[in-house]
Image 1 (tube, one colour):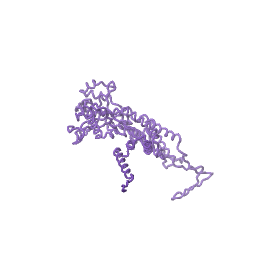
Image 2 (image 1 turned 90 degrees about the horizontal axis):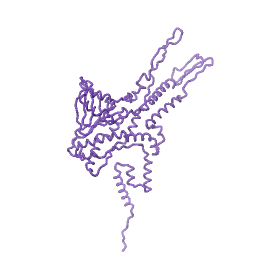
Image 3 (image 1 turned 180 degrees about the horizontal axis):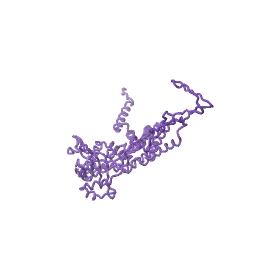
Image 4 (image 1 turned 135 degrees about the vertical axis):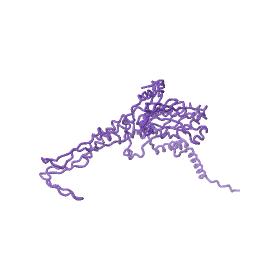
Length: 485
């Protein structure tokens, strides 16, 4: 459903009509997104999905025919959840953002000074808000709850915050907060008929005088309006102006939770594991079966003694025990686990798989992670990249308000740059680099930078050259003075 910006603007003065219109756009968050923790899975919490078992328990009393009497009792069954949903989320976020987000800017010759100041201010803001870490939290919330809203706002900067970057007249800095259904917030993105986001609303509950009060923030380009659900219904509480020329929010969203496609398979694995535990409880220990009649039994009452039985009429005693798990159940679980990881592009790597593989070739590592890296690149070149591009575009406008001297650099080309971190075979990499240097195909200067043993490879190379020069002096032959007349 879409809304015309003119229609939205016309309703701003009438909260009793505006809020229901916005609420009608509220997206549906799947109930299972709130139950991602293993202890909340339905195999554990839903008794209708996995009911208690009714069993017959002997009373120890015989009826008038000499038969044992029984009573009905309910016993809980095994409930074995898994953390597969969290593994899928963690791997997806890790592949997307574990390499951090760099700010890739093009410094223009005609605006070199202001562009460099703008870039320095962006990097300072990025580091001050710890965005390389915050980005992973935001992405994890989006991938589970399908939405996360990031709101930027200015606060007074502490003394010396912009030293060496911006003039002393720059008295403010930027802060960001993020909201999602994890904390009870409902985010409502509002699109026009062309699919462009024109606004966003945040509905939340606050405690006022020990009572829960419902509020809504509506974010627009030039302001955001806070509405409160008072005794007379929705009313406007306050209006906060936005001076950046852009709306001060970025919406992170996707259509479905990251694991939605494989959730039925995950639940089936939990069911199979729980059923297997129930079966093991019954059949894992050997059962003594008697054939014929036991006429007497002795012993077994003291430690380290065996019980003996006297049998008649060719009687026999045998242990009955399972000959192994049911192969079809084992195969089903194995196939389900493989499909879950394959279909979500999630690496499935265990210590057993890595045993004896201490020196995996680099190409094998790349192939092992190929589905995951392809998925991550698709995200980085798609919605994830666009979301963080919006952050940078907004922050450029914010920097120009904090420091008017960089206003000309709002048009500076800036984009987020992502890196995918994979395990590395360092021995193989170093051997290849040394071989290239030995063949004259790579300079030693470049090799030191590629090996990256230190944080300052340039200084390290200068030390290497100095040490080599000193060693050459020590090896140089000593020239004896000519004493002949």
